Image (cartoon, rainbow, N blue to C red; front, top):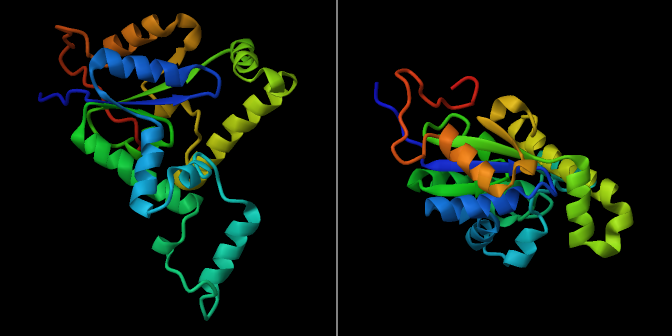
Length: 226
């Protein structure tokens, strides 16, 4: 059997779980490209907008009244904006462009992709390994208080709100449950520490030096059906 080697790792993460830090260190360890905010910058470049504007749409849905109005504009006998979909920059356009960035990066390989639905976009692509990083409520709260001391009293509400926004984006764009276990090959508790998380990922993905897998022990895509 010809096995497809892993050359793409996606890292989805709860806000405050230090998943981004893990992804950065993992990319350094492997000598691969890290694509985190770079996905947003790439989408901005293609759309011809500033990275600052694109960042406002990162991992967010447009407001409900905008989405309602957009449906009305499309259904109206005479388009009200006079603009094509490619000329309008909103969350839907942003997500479409980021998906293209993700797919192009995966085609090139040797990269670590952070969030933004990468696990869903690449669910049926061989050679991809999907990781979800989570943490206890206390660990996330401690991180938030240290990072944003002026907002410490609202830590729990803001942490929850951030993850709900991420989940809403994935549900809307990919029709998937963001934290569904079936989307990922490995779920890691960041209490392990970054070093142990990297070691576990390398071992599970067969990236250790000299790693060998049993016959038939192929890492399969997570998408159903694929």
